Image (cartoon, rainbow, N blue to C red; front, side, top):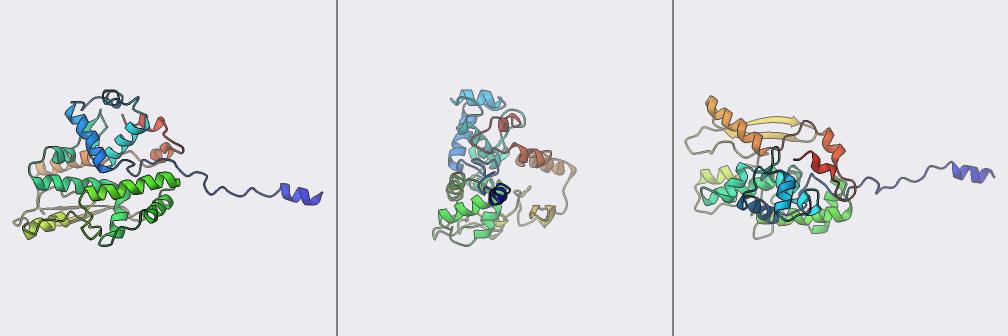
Length: 278
């Protein structure tokens, strides 16, 4: 009798898989090429400024909370290609790609889009100058770091590899670069500018005549979150305002991280995740 009582008092073993997410809004679940096609359709069909619900309907999706539309919208935001603060709008980065002033702007836009994904920055820095790891190793790393189920982590790993290849970050020998490779004919100063790995793209173009300085702002030392801007030491008030407006478009700004934690989906696609994005 006492033996049965002791067993009934034993605590159940914790389920290690409990709490793992089947989806994430921290990493793209749609690769860069597919997202570019999605954003291009929004621009070509003149859907900018429409609500997400209207955009979804016009593009043939069931609703704005349907998995294909939701994942494309989240991925496009993470890459910094659309802004959903008021309707669905293309960012300056998207225009740099779809309506570039020169070929280099288009190439640089792809690099910036990949670097815009905060979750990618650690992976890129970890494997910069090295061969990309096998897909299953990358999947395991993502699964553990972002607390995802295996299937979701596998999707994110595949999307990462496809995206960095589309952005031109994978060299011919299979190693991962921290910047887009420049043609050998490019001037040294131009190659240096493109090689600057920052959390945000340089606000102003750097030319040989500029005495540029790098400025660092630590957002969270524990999580190694910081902003790096390379700019001339002296700028005008109007230029400062342009930089501030540019950053407001390029960065996905939220009030705090707490609401995002509560909105994360735990199984499949959750309709509530889209309510705060329109």
